[in-house]
Image (cartoon, rainbow, N blue to C red; front, side, top):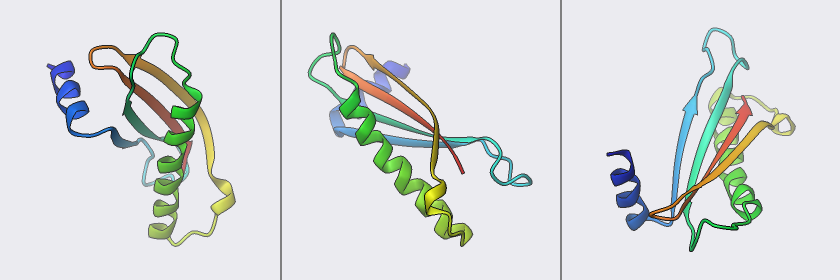
Length: 103
């Protein structure tokens, strides 16, 4: 079922974004926020993930900046990526990048 949903989304858009906030509101700055980025790819085998990772970091930074504006914080230089993960799902060929960052 999950792959059916991925296939449907891949047909609708070239890029997919999702965000997961695992921070505890009572303890600001604790726990990572994860931005999940998906993009169609021509093939999965032998793929160079670096351009996909670079493109995924842009919406992660945008989301971080949006959270700062919402919290009225001025810490633009504090954006810190703590982990990056990537993989490709074949059929359809979909590259998925996870950007973990501190808020």
